Length: 185
Image (tube, rainbow, N blue to C red; front, top):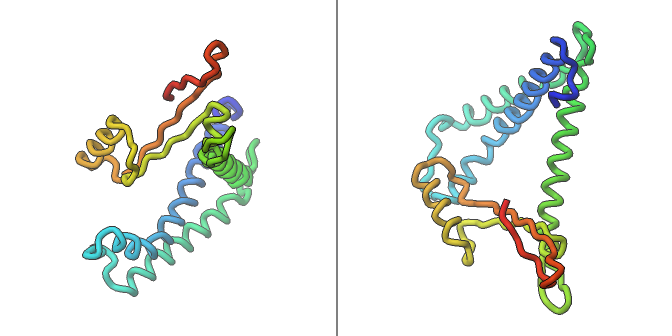
């Protein structure tokens, strides 16, 4: 993005505006996500109790006001006020193009994990094309020891509570041995 922006102050304003636009967009969704937070946390721990939004009127009123305020900012921020070299409507256009490309990237990664039958045995599409994405959840049985240790260390240090790790392997066809030796990224 830096290489495509003009080198004047309008390019800097565009980059800052794009960052802020994306931040506000996701803040709106985080506010709406509070509605499902209590239910989701109770699935993990039935004794869970919200410490901030205990009253239902507060739990429903604050996120709605915050989300509507962010929605108004998203709508009116993209309208041209003082036109520069880069029109402000490019903030949402660029942001949604980045978001769309990230969904496509995620979709391709998930397609590489799909199982297919190849020459009588089950393989993933990633194994067939030489690009394999492995996702280890906390319930994965054949998880490598170093991944399990990394996950336990991050949980103990309260750095990462996702209990999931992703490993990417890139393989190339070794013509002499007709096999796919892999290396980790």
